[in-house]
Amino acid sequence: MIGAGPAGLAAARAAAEAGARTIALERATHPRYKTCGGGLIGTSLSIAESHIQVPGRDTINAVTFTRSGRLGFTRHARRRPLLTMVRRDDFDHAWFEAAVAAGATVRQNAQVRAVTQNDDAVTITLSDGTEIVARSVIGADGSASVTSRHVGVTLDQQDLGLEVEIAATATDRENWRGRVLLDWGPFPGSYGWVFPKDDELTVGVIMTKGHGAETKQYLQDFLAQLGLTDRKVVRDSGHLTRCRRPDSPLRNGRVIVAGDAAGLLEPWTREGISFALRSGTWAGSAAAKNDLAEYERRIAAELVPEMVAGRRMLSAFSRRPLLVHAAMALPLGWRAFQMFCRGELAMADVVHRPGIGAAVRLLS
Image 1 (cartoon, rainbow, N blue to C red):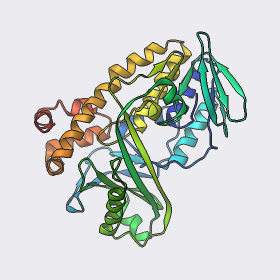
Image 2 (cartoon, rainbow, N blue to C red):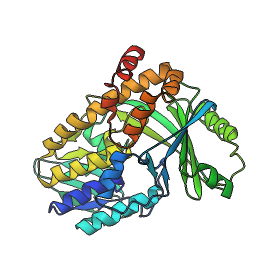
Image 3 (cartoon, rainbow, N blue to C red):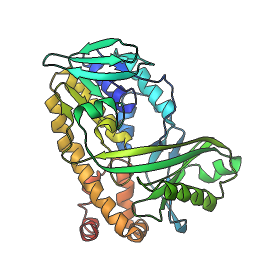
Image 4 (spheres, helix red, strand yellow):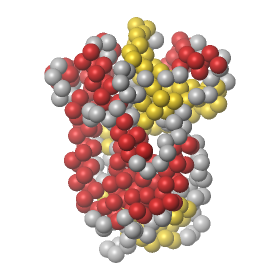
């Protein structure tokens, strides 16, 4: 494996558990910080709970929706929680320990410089000149990475996310415990969020790449609307999310890509952890069996339909964000949202539900 985030570590754990001799190469050292909202939907949670003790910082039972800071309302879940909030250094380190416990070797501070292959094996060259030879390689080193370029991943959607993690006051912790905020932003396809993580609040916004000044202004305005501009900033970061084209390859010979390296994420919400855990687990299993084509088939059957549906939802949302906002106030929309968050309903199922499907088709 190249990369030891959720996709790479899920792959390493699955491959090692299946009996394959497994090494994961990570350029940093665990535990390490990673920019991420850190909200686990039910799909991610069900995978994670099977292999790690999830280091949850908060459990979410309520969502406040706003449109550009206005028209706010809050909905409460009546049954199970909607989301579990984690910090990525905690979450990734738990997967690191699970991979090692399964028998994988995780080599840290290992920067990959090149990947080459022939009919029999793949050679990985590290920055110190070390060469590692493997029967197959799983690339999970993020978008625009060495393995992504090697496979030839092509993209059709790139977004810029800006995020601050601020120290929560006692009042903040009381006000935000168990509740997130989603703000449908002022630019097509944009939105903002507030995610509570015990002693910190993660506040972020995302919109199409190429509008850096507007994205920064949205975040500043968002913080001001929330009355959070005077809080101590613990971390301040930005990141790009990159979504694959429908015809983008997942494999080049003996090298396959998973998670962000493959451009696998949900296009509307830009949720990527569930895609990373699923694709990584499937990649590790396929590599252990030396059947990389099985991985391609499973992605096509299970994740591609979700991405197609997500693109349709993003198109509809970009055109009529107020209709999406209004839908969350209605029983049908709120029920579908809850089921999606809990992993009971995939995005592909959401757009085929009566009423929702018709509206999405009309708007997109």
